[in-house]
Picture 1 (spheres, helix red, strand yellow):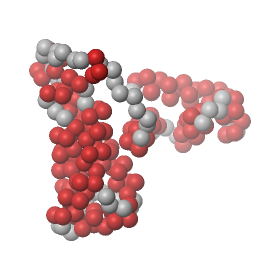
Picture 2: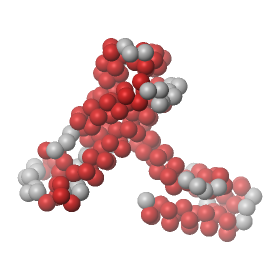
Picture 3: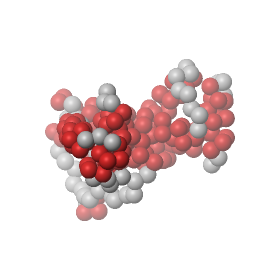
Length: 189
């Protein structure tokens, strides 16, 4: 297991062409990323694609783009967030690909599932969930004034619309309009 400080050194070694660095990064993250990918792949896709397949693709992309200098990674947390984001997006892309009209997995005969596999496993939110949430929030706030971000942040902290208006020094109607617009955007997502 690599410590957070040495991870950045390993990334730098990879940029310099050290093949051992790629092996170390893969060994450090592959299992966690595979579990993350499995959470975003439906049970129906199990016969076609698995989390390990997605992880292979994630690392191909990561290694290629890192070697090309496309990523600026300043911390081990940033490295994990980047790998998790790539993993989630690739898993979702696989789901879209395998449910397109000509390849639609749901058109196939469903396999018999035992009772243990019929309920999704409950889990506590982890760092990958935070990455996904941040992606959704970024998309939700894209192109909106900074005030909307402040309103959303206070709302997520549990403040009421009148309290938000008082804290930000705006009219209540401004807060209600912002929350209404954010709700509409969220519904479209």
